[in-house]
Length: 229
Image (tube, rainbow, N blue to C red; front, top):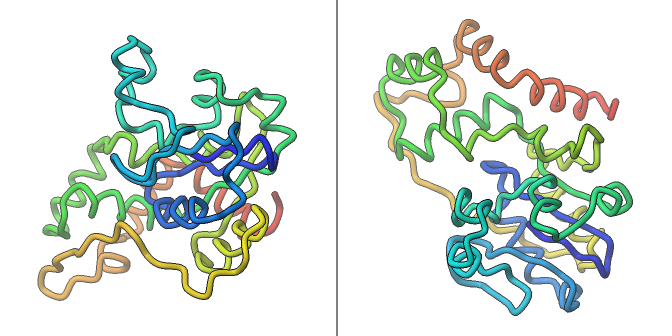
């Protein structure tokens, strides 16, 4: 989560959308130095600044939300930010707010790979989808970040055009165009029997199951692609 009251711009980190890379690039900007700027760490621990919320202190002080989310404030939603007092609904509607929107099936697979560290037998994947295994924060709906109190407040960055869209956001925050956009927090996946996780698992049945579960995200992504938002 990055909120710049000085620039009137925000970036909320939807899990499993490349947000570590995007947050790192934003933290590299010289424009985010105002005393009112709020920036959570790029990853767990480290890269902190004077205006970085201190999770540990918040927990020690008994802030219920901090205790509930532990170190997940970096993936706070706009409504979380309001509850913590970092921004108001009125400001969210006034500011330029960015989030990254990823194709739901691709994002779910990424969450699965993150948890399992490898691609298991397709049967296991099928069972987890059918049981709607909850990966917690990793599968928090993108709509939770796009909307606040029922109002669409976010400009969507297309994960399918990650480099170009990241540069577009950086430019909006006042950055020069970086020649290279690194890929951070990538996890090596061990494939079994040459299985391609992006194609070989998605039977029509499993696709429908995931699309029903994340129907709001499917609609959001389709509207983004259609340019109807």
